[in-house]
Image (cartoon, rainbow, N blue to C red):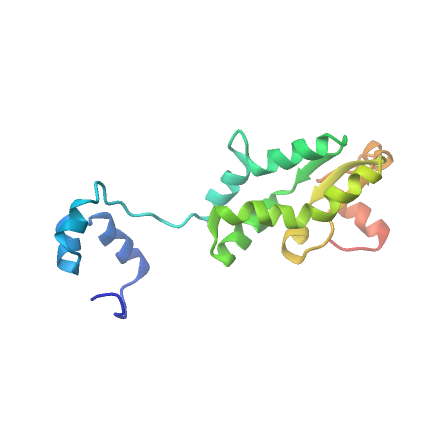
Length: 168
């Protein structure tokens, strides 16, 4: 018991116990009554799951993915994130133990060069962020108007990569 104590209790049991935490428990733990009395509400928080982080990336009105899509649309470029890319961004945030705060920087890292290069290349019409772009730092797949007209998109970009002699 206390700050330096080792805890051998499984994480699930710890969460269940903390859900039932009462002010009296804090007093028994050793906090002074004056401090406990100033806590109007005692709540417990759970870490966000990968699914929660993907929802943060896509669902809000001002979601991170929508912000970058709007930014690139100013240069007439459609930005597309594959499902694998969204999942990878969530998993990287969990690995870094930074949660939702890291999502913007993770997406920015993958788009940094593109945001500077796209204005100079008027022929680019689509930018596809893949799982490899997020995990390995590969450049996103940039499609020209001709390639988009030929039917290449986020569902069949593998064929285009094979033609270029690259892998996803």
